[in-house]
Amino acid sequence: MARSAVAQEEIRRFLDIGAVQVAELDIDGEDAVLRPGPGSPPLTHGEVFVLVRWGGRPVGTLLGRVPEGADARAVLVERARAECAPALAEEPWQEPPFTSVVVATRERAGQLARALDSLLAQDHPRFEIVVVDNAPVTSRTRELVERKYAERVRYVCEPVPGLASAHNAGLDAVRGEVVAFTDDDVVADLRWLTELTAPFAADAGLGCSTGLILPARLTTPAQVLLESHGGFAKGFTPRTYDPAHPPGDEPLFPFTAGRFGSGANMAFRTAVLREVGGFDPATGAGTAARGGDDLYGFVRVLAEGHRLRYTPYALVWHHHRETWRDLETQAYGYGAGLTAYLTAVLVNRPALLPAFLARLPRGLRHARALTAVRATEGADGGGTPGDHDVRTHPWPRRLSRLQRRGMAYGPVGYLKARRALRATARGAR
Picture 1 (spheres, rainbow, N blue to C red):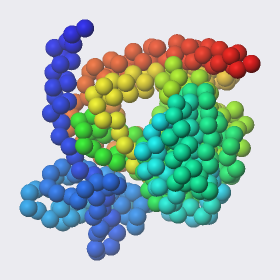
Picture 2 (picture 1 turned 30 degrees about the vertical axis):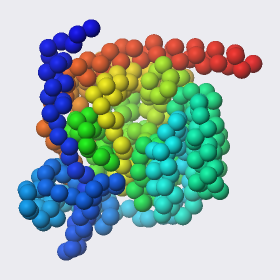
Picture 3 (picture 1 turned 120 degrees about the vertical axis):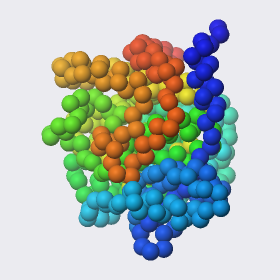
């Protein structure tokens, strides 16, 4: 079917989006340190997406332009010191508990190796790594782990397809007091695991923590477009969500779980996640539901009275998808995963239905606003100083429509996924 003239114009504008460099800048002290982002080449002139740090900790981002012939460090330091004043929370440091890291993967050995190298370099004092090979069709992942990471990484095979099933297999296998989850397409910052898990030592009522996700590369139009409309970042202000004291600025709490974080950067107290039954296997990528497994986990833990902590100091660099078709798939999947996870929560925790219905009218208005344009706000809901707000490229209406279509499909997809799981279980008997 031919695309409409509007869709063709949107794609034309999309293809005109240029690449943006990625860099890191630490402005603590007189001698600010500027370096390329992970895997990025040395900086040149042109547009630069900069993570600003203070004493190593992330405090903000900015989009800058380095004129040809100019000193990139001088240009960016001046901008960063004017716009990204540090607002680091004073938190007493406690040694983090023994932690297990679960990485689910499927036929992406090259990406997995890059992620594992960054995980093995973590400064966390006590941790293990478990790779879950989800419904593999080749032996490449197992061979990689056994050849390159023997005795440092444990290998688990989960034959049932789906990210939630893979995460549950990892949950069954881990030994840590805390279990952290990340993806095979990230590079973890050196202190990622320590920053993500130390809050569990400081707060016995904490059930979950999430962290900051920034782009590892911005070389294709799809990557730049996604990040210019917020990407996966949730701001630079630490925040604790407590079901005993619902946040006044979150009237839909806890059903707007996308505000809390994302599955590429999350951790749970292991016993708590096991008590709620782990993730619903009929949610997540690789199932008909398309996504929502992480959001399901957040809400289930909050619904049991445990707190959730977001910390921007726990950073992973994510390799965003690269093509227009990837964005179309992602937009539809996000919409489907949103309503699929809500369906899963109500099916598995029907006592939440009255609270959900009470919030439904505002929820529908929120959903329409969400798909009208991607928000650039952080988790604090309002442009934290240093948050990037660079809507330099309009969000295509086609992607918004696809996300709404996905939302309409999500409950159907969830029910299809449940039927597929039952069929698989019957076939295994």
